[in-house]
Image (cartoon, rainbow, N blue to C red; front, side):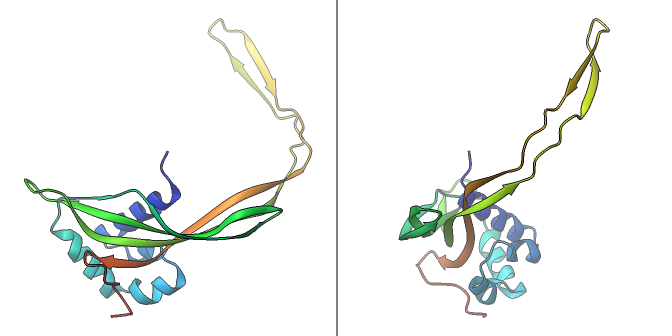
Length: 169
């Protein structure tokens, strides 16, 4: 199963390769929106990728974490910073890092309300012997649960030398 960080990074790369500024911006946090969320920056990032026949996202590497109260009695990482290398390949050449995505994630617990189901919804199917079978849903009471949420967004991009791209240029 793919991690949320890898999925988000792949969505960003897909958006860049397809010149979809709006989809690219959806992957960015507010600071990155200012620094790299412009049409000009999208074109520059796309230009960096254009020389490669294929681009993949490497595994997420945790580079920092902050411990604290995640909510509802849970302690642990409340934020994590990741780096994910975008690796490009050219025919008959070894793969290389094109740039590195920096991603910020927050981890917290939230109380979620689940509406009950009054039940009684029935459906009838006919089996291969032409016999009808009726199935009905059972009623369920409303309930609450405490669910863990991890929200992530790209906070920056570093070139292969480690220099931060952007700043609205």
